[in-house]
Length: 375
Image 1 (cartoon, rainbow, N blue to C red):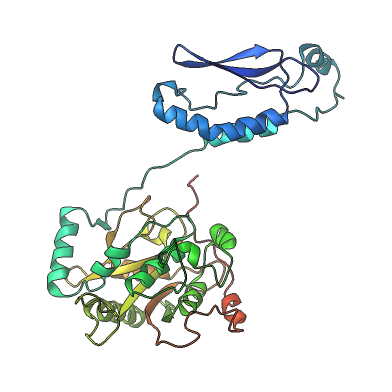
Image 2 (tube, rainbow, N blue to C red; image 1 turned 90 degrees about the vertical axis):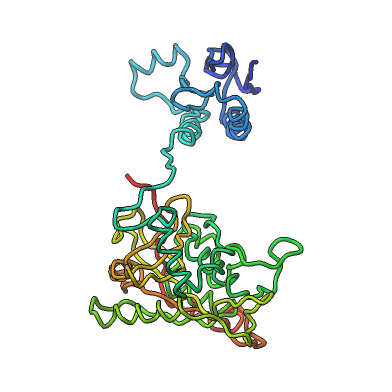
């Protein structure tokens, strides 16, 4: 099969044809011209090629390179010889080198599949992780686990850890978003949390703990945030008391969190911490806490970046220490938030901008909360 890229621009020698034979892609030298329009077409055809290679993996090149424009001379042979003797060659306006490199980069970028947890963090799928979960469920200190597990999902963007965490908690608290997610269903997802800041900004920069609290209030929650100001035992025990209180409490039968006879937690706790302090890759991160194990003084963190780390048990002291590094944007440490459903009011789901409280959404500067690829 031959794919020939051509246009009506003046002919010049270039590499512009692709052949698939004997299970190997070959690039042939042809006299058809190749312009930027051809490479735009090649870029549009790249997803089709990816699907073809998924169905026929034996056509993959060893280095996973794109099979178009692999070796592309920018000048004809006479022009190339002239350029060697003269250093004043005019740039070719149709030179496709920049576009070709961008296409090639899409196929040569490094990719990753998961990360290993450090030794002091316990994967909840291991035998030790299972023992802790059974122990906390039986001991009544895993109150949030079932409701979080029933609404848990993976963040859809590397910088959406805060939005994903909030969506999980809002669904776990059975807060009605009062707007459609996917017709005809109302359900919280990251794309419904475009209030305090546009999603395009959050996708690039993430959110701060202040932004998280603003979004929670705009979506029908009461959110109490606490910053880990010092490394003192007193501050740590404040976090410990909050974790025990949230993980040990369940809703009463009179609360609206009751559905089909099930008692669901009336509050949830979210931690904001620096991944580096837990010997993980990345920067700032948000995740909900699902259980507390008194025997090991550890908490079950439901990491929303499941493509990277599974849920894991972490020593609470280490989690608190991971909150202490200063956020570069706010110049404050990170901390935790306790969320519960707000009483029904006419403005329970009005954005802060609609309420004329835009200053609250802008109070904290942006912070890069996504996990950049390692060097």
